[in-house]
Image (cartoon, rainbow, N blue to C red; front, top):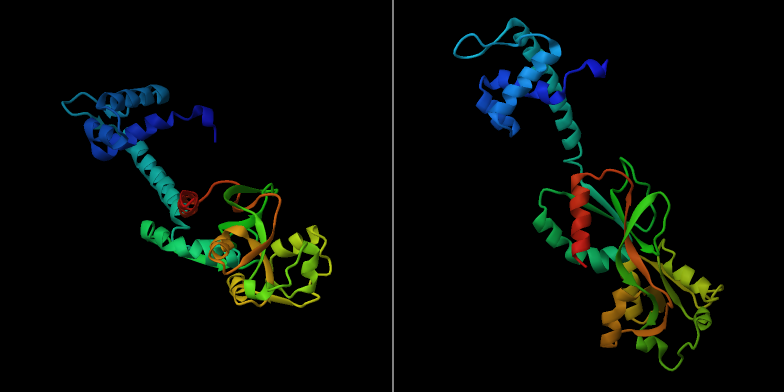
Amino acid sequence: MNWRSMPPLSALRAFEAYASFGSLQKAGDALSVSHAAISQQIRNLETHLNVALLDRSGRQAQLTDDGLALAAELKRGFEAIGNEVQRLTTKDAERPLIVSTTPSFAANWLVPRLADFRAKHPQIDVVIDANPSISEFGPNGPDVAIRFGQGGWNGVEALLLVTTRRFAVAAPSFICDDCPTSPADLARFPLLQEVGTSESSLWLAKHGVCDAGQGGVTVLPGNLTLDAARMGQGITVTAGIWVQGDIESGRLVKLFEDDEDFGYYIVTRTGVQRASLKAFTKWLRAQV
């Protein structure tokens, strides 16, 4: 197609609107411009084509044969464009929003707040994939992931949501008189770890607990890990925000703490986001 020979799109739109409504005023209202602007666009189109599209000899201008032919083709063309735009903008409307996150984050932060999102966006169906495994973004993957770390991941957009440090905690009844004095001491205690995540294992390795689990390791889903710790079944390393209330109430004792901040990040693939994802990420940010 020779784009340089094509008339301006604004002129074609103005002429098609006039042909459809039969009135300069109605065409202008449809395109949010004045009727004088529609008239000028049509004259510009006639000049560009060197063809009379309107017969202005009578009281009411009439489409010429050339004008009728062009109007019919423009109507078909604009309708085809409109149908395709509609298909593209609504193709994902019925697909649920898939949120991938760790069981701990889902149980302790997301699910308790989710009713607020449902109330504000009842038209958006949400699937919470509380799975510690990292899934690839794509047509069959999550729309957004909420992950623990320090950001800076390649190939994705990551926005900090909540800052926290990692705590090693246990129930007072579990520690009794045998309180560890250094992270290395944890190797001789029963440990509780969340399935599939690396937060606790990385923390233990960082503090030289390479032979963790001499006292046994129990691997549990995130929400059950803290329940087991509260019942005095072992020591766990977890995000401080999940256990702050337990520490303040005395249900758990903080044994050790990170010396640097980590956080939970909203992670999405780069590029255009569908409307439901924009609404969800905006809501997430508003929660903090």
